[in-house]
Image (cartoon, rainbow, N blue to C red; front, side, top):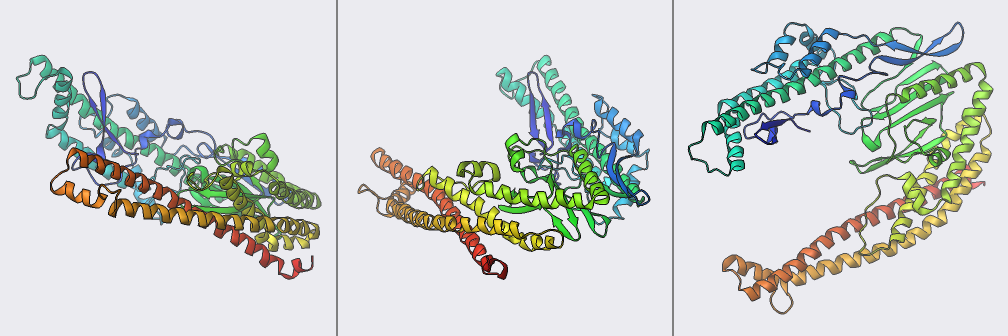
Length: 562
């Protein structure tokens, strides 16, 4: 996102990227004013007005949920900045009204002092927990204000150099069908002057509105961080809501035998997640597995968790204990459910430990294995839809739709079902609490059923690999023939050189165009099938790795006795 200069002319408003105007400052610009007001001036609720927390009182051995009010620090600044933002002409003819106001407060100095006490340059504050595009909020206001002042100076320079006048003049002349250099009427000259002045003021307003939104975000982030500090001073407060950006998994201890963890990845679009994880006697209690795709990084990772929070699970997805990453959203409001679930789990553990074990360990472990048993028999198309959001892309040159669906589905089943073998040690630890033999036998049976399916798919994949290798070779060979041999009327290489030196007759040009088109088409095809080649190789390596994983676990002492 970037800041735009607005050019106001007689009939239309034209936008120009400020950072693309010659001589513009080189600082990276984030357009804060593009943010919806629900995240800025109108932000409210959890992690804005109050934190949600869990309180544990040793004397009554009970956990309660509570709210901790976030103080409206610098409320006078908030209201003034909001007022300036709302006023059409509130920034002054020189665009310095915001700066002049800030100089009457100590907020900039406070921000500078605060920045000296921390390692990072920016607040750890996720503006929109579901969105991948997050603004960075400088802790030290001077950093952002310096960017603002550079842009302000640049706009004023453009104004002094008649940039807005010339741009407005060109547009108005084009609209009027007049040529430049002619003497203009007083009315047209007045229109140009008015348009230039309005464009200049709009440019000043644009960067001022942007810095206003930054200040509002700074206040939200500052208030949040100060509330977390104050809240942490009370040792009875054992867990808190947050809006930290990226991977975060603060661990909270009720006592030495029971901990909870809010495992989050806020601000990463489809890769965002929000889990509750519980630990009992040092053992992680997980009844669900989730495959999280990090699309930009071309990476997938399996997460194990106790409860997952998302806004839009379907009934079927609820039954499977999963959600489709394409449709899921998360929000700060989910903290209500997360804190309530954590409270109930804590109190069940404190009051009825046997019931806690039955609900959160025995029933959930059985439920997890049952879901994997359902997955292995789920159709290929359904598996791909439910459990992967970033699918491998294939062209239609070599493989049928059914082949592609099958190989991707077996990757999902292989990843999830053989992947649970990686958690066997965690399951074995539960022997201290319950008998896990029957669950291990079911996991073993699942993987025994999966192994020949993977081996068959590996054979199919090798055939797919051979076909794509042949197609790659044939396509490249044909490209070479078109370039060096041609079709009897000449080759593309010679015709290209001839065209550069002396041009081509109409007949020869026709041959050149035909060969060039064939070469271009082959080049596009080659790009697609090379991507197919890479994907087939990745999928084949994955399937072989899942098969090897099963073989290695079956060779271990426990499974070798089954």
